[in-house]
Length: 313
Ligand code: CDP
Image 1 (cartoon, rainbow, N blue to C red):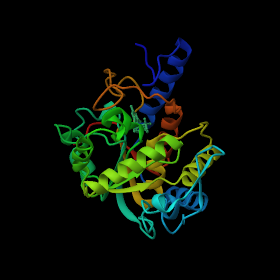
Image 2 (image 1 turned 90 degrees about the vertical axis):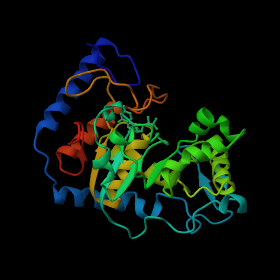
Image 3 (image 1 turned 45 degrees about the horizontal axis):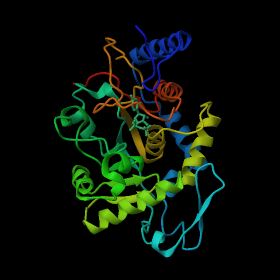
């Protein structure tokens, strides 16, 4: 069979390499998992000193006053904070001085289909989801419903909601399943995303949706990239999933991952998998997913976080 990462068809050489990554993952996964407290502490200490997500992950009115400048990720371009933009910032950082017990970070991988992991995911104290992944419609049993934080890449507003230029109610209705969770917007990766994000926030306010929108801080994103590069990850842009895992590693004593498996076949019986549990749209940006996955697998083996690749009881 041709094993490949979800975002590309590979040449035979790469296919061999990926087979290697998968075989190694399956082998590592078969070892008994045990939490290693000192490895957790060490990584958390490093992450906190270099990235400090608990105080910096989100743009706040405290951190970013009117007339200050926000730098777009990896670009020279900056944006001056106007009073209008400032008024859309949250006042205080939502994670300051917080530590949580158990967090579930839910990636969107097709590996979640028929996993029956919904209940286990929902039993976590804090549940993080990515890119407004759909809940309900029969997905609950496998992905759960509880959400404390959900990310939304602004490109979703273009793809699913006509860039919020037409009727905006369908967007607000889709937000209902996330209740009053935090909606994390990576608004400062490109300037086009800022406009879309502000439009989303105005929509949320105008329709009085209970969801709480916040902006992902581009400085935090930048520091995470440098951090993981210093740990050997060769990448130019981190995926949403790894960004959320990084935040969870600072925020939570126990980090569990579901739906992280960026390959075309299931690790156990090798049946075909779709890229997402809800569709088979392939990612446009190549995030070096196998390299990221290898990093997550390493953290799993070190007892720092726990990946779940199997079905839940
Ligand atoms: O496109 P983007 O990377 O922002 O994310 P997504 O496709 O909406 O999925 C959310 C996250 O789940 C990704 O960033 C990956 O970390 C993870 N994922 C995975 O590990 N395996 C997959 N087959 C799909 C997603």
